[in-house]
Image (cartoon, each protein chain N blue to C red):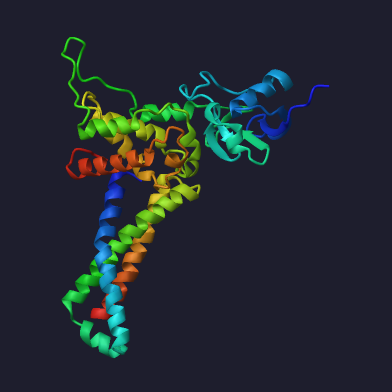
Length: 243
Length: 108
């Protein structure tokens, strides 16, 4: 008689904002990720379960969920690491509207990227010579430190200030703005500094550092926001910013 | 919070840091020396230095606290930014008036 594999008890959020947790039993496997568990439920136990994923290797930033109370990227989170008591509770990301089950509406998150002028604005055309950027220059080092963000929304879900202040742009958008402020090729920094210095911008940050604590790539948006605070304050005192 | 309020709040904090230390030192001195109220008033009455010191302290504290209260209200109450700003301005003005009244009692 085949032996039954050990099981793990998994509570998944079902429904919209006013949903509830439902519990499933999922076979425990070696090197199993939290995303594997969610996928097992959808493929074997309830095909109506909604969740979002794409690459499964920590590059696309689409599979973030709340796992046992903490926002995490589920594709790179091992069950063995987070479910020591043999229990998993998986919900949608905090601070974002719930569409259904584990899927949140990321629109407010990306709209704030736009508000923070998170798009690169070229200062040259393709007819110009390529900009020569010294990798060891302080500006490039600051840009490089913040540039690997994959927009997973984990920092946004972990941020207390986002929870309290719906206007606040959030750590990811401000982190992105900081990379561009330090990009010598960008030509929109006056507008960008004005955007992040307005109400709901970088000065709303309380430096709780939840973004840094939870970022799956170990980026430090708090440091990026501190940089923006210094840069905007200097620009304001020099008369370059009108608020 | 925008950059203007941020600069004002940080600037008033920087101004108050040494003022607080001096204030605490004065308290220690007055209590250790056993100065009575009359002793203290004899030193402060008519003093432009003490009037300036506590006048600046009151102004800085009023601005700093009003900006902080505005932040608390915008994050924790249902008030709009504008209403929170007005409430905080009234609160700051009240602190300023009460503070100046105390300074006047000390130096006039």
